[in-house]
Image (tube, rainbow, N blue to C red; front, side):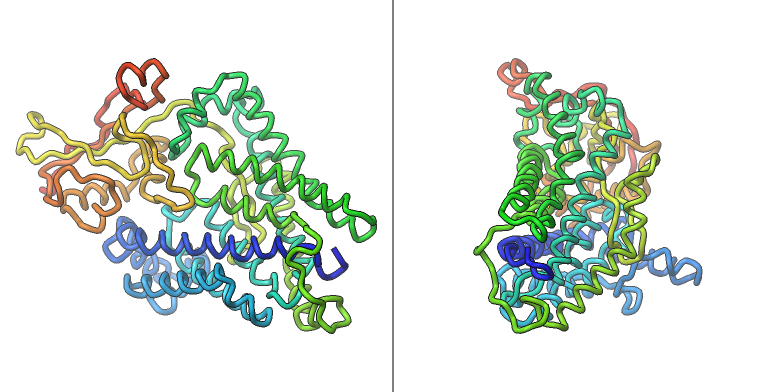
Amino acid sequence: MDGFAAVDFGFAREVLQRGIAALYLVAFVSTLNQFRPLLGERGLLPAPALLEWVASRETRKRMLHPTLFRRIGYTDRRLAILCWAGIVISASLVIGLPQLGPPWAPMLAFLALYLGYMSVVSIGQTFYSFGWEMLLLEAGFLAAFLGSNDQPPPTVVIVLFWWLLFRLEFGAGMIKIRGGREWRDLTALMFHHETQPMPGPLSRQAHLLPRWLHRIEVVGNHFAQLIVPFFLFAPILSLWVEGPVPQIIGACAAAVVIVTQAWLVLTGNFAWLNWATIVIGFSAVGIPGIGAAPAAASPWPGLPLYWFAITCAVGILYLAVSWPSLRNLAARRQLMNASFNRWQLANAYGAFGTVTKQRIEIVVEGTDHDDPDAADWREYEFKGKPGDVRRIPRQFAPYHLRLDWLMWFLPLGHSLDDWFTVFLIRLLEADAPTLALLRHDPFDGTPPRWVRAVSYRYRFATRAERRAEGVRWVRTGRRVVMGPVGLR
């Protein structure tokens, strides 16, 4: 590092800008494909109804984060236009076109992504209530101030990425230590691979590893999240300490984060959470001479004066808004995935403070028989969540299957959510956009006479069960939890 300019972090900026833009591309594609049947004009939780409810009373207007749709109104067509604009801008940043211009060019592109996606998240309700939504928003805001190819990245912005990564990792670590006993007695990962929201193709193999290895996994997780994050800030010492040691320490800390997140990518489907953490982890990788930009004529080495002023203002802003999240890290009742301001900056992060010990799945069935008591029931298949016991889970992340994720949460509540009732009605109507969210419709687009919801306890098949029966899951404890339900 060289004072105001992080001259050795040009490669880090390349990874940050292109990686974050790629995640925005995935997010907008996911929204284009899923928002309208979930939250559109005929969605399970219609966004227009939320906007009308907010507009009905002045006191409710601050309950909504900023969104363009409050001013222009929501229609499915406007949502599609916004998504396509986000896709085009994201793709241009992945290619690197705005980065060829002055620093304000990528700044405007990333701010457009940030504000556009916030407009979606703000009306996304429970389908957009995940921590990685605010993580993507905050990362996009910071990426706006990394500059372009004709100058090195500003030191203050690189350090703010370290602060983001610290909150992300250390916050998750503290949530676990303060959470369930399974994280303290080192048994959490004896359950997690099996009970996580959406297992991947290697989750079963990870679950079947020896118990002693699962304990090592937990120890490694605590080391990576509670100790390593402090060393991310080591490169700052290079301002006073000569030699490569500070940057090597920071790069090693980043490598630990990246490797542990890569293991989570291999064994689960957590949308873009792990992918975003990997990308942000590269912010601490300083490589002298790689990606370095020529110095600009300026009293602030390497940075134009106006850009130095803008990035300093961003740093001051973050000093002002970071206090609640810093205090939250030390709080006994630590908040998880919490935003302390309307613009969702300097948020608190964390996940899996407790680990579910049993996997309960809601399976949706339908029949075209007039008498539900004498019916032959057939199952609807979801794309990602477990259903058919012989089917191997697929890898979807960083793409986010929102309906499948919400299905995982259903058995954890005291009752089935309102959106699920509307979902059953859409199945009874054979609504094409809703059916497109599923892997298999047993009625081939024709309306069933009845539908119902059945719960099972799922567990991964042992190696012996897999060889004998050809199954990857074993399910027991069948129970009807809703229905039969018909349109009449």
